[in-house]
Length: 285
Ligand code: LER
Ligand code: MN
Image (tube, rainbow, N blue to C red; front, top):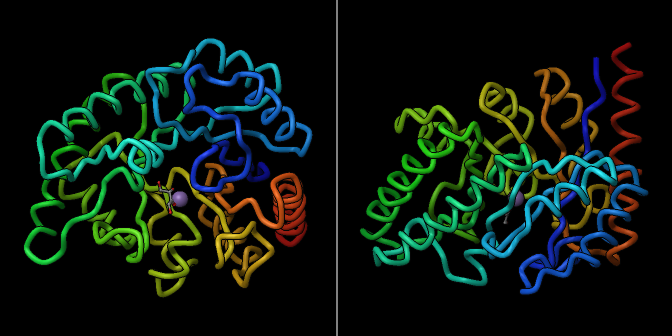
């Protein structure tokens, strides 16, 4: 059996690990190159790019840069489009929703060029609570339906990520995300689970992974405190065993805080995950 692949989020947003300044215009390709270099040297197989202005990015240049470092571009993260530009699938005003969809359409084209996945995490936004929640959920569902259709024409897979209740009131659990995918009959949308959110919302991380195995296309890893894996109290050995048991073929993509500092986090995450993956291979031989 193949070893599980490891990746890391490359972003200057959200305090994530490496800082290429992807969102800045002009894009700081020199910094991106440095980030890719650090990821490649640390032993990652792929990078997940967080973007807030997909329109600014030169796909050919970024792909060439990744390939020259033997890195796959695993996924495009869209959270910064919400955090920095206020784009949201659940926005009450229709002009924000159409801006959001048009930015996500750019992301689908980028994802097609990169051969990557497209994440829908915090860009779904949040509601004002009470009655507004169901209406907001309906708007998210409509957006997901449109994206799913666009993505299917371009051969791209969209990822719906359950996010814990302290960050949004829309789609907190794996069960809810699975039922959205089923009820909306989405065919090009799968699941992105994130160990940090799962630790808060799921009864058992391993049981949820087993339950979602057919739809699970990508995994964000961070420890219980959002520090890199190994710095909190999650049992990553067990998580890896479960992923192997369900024949998971996607990435473990680290989306952690830059703690104790950026470079240590990048290096330690790779060393720690590789060690656990190796151990799991020995245990099942
Ligand atoms: C935020 O907590 C997160 O997990 C991101 O992947 C969502 O965009
Ligand atoms: Mn995540």
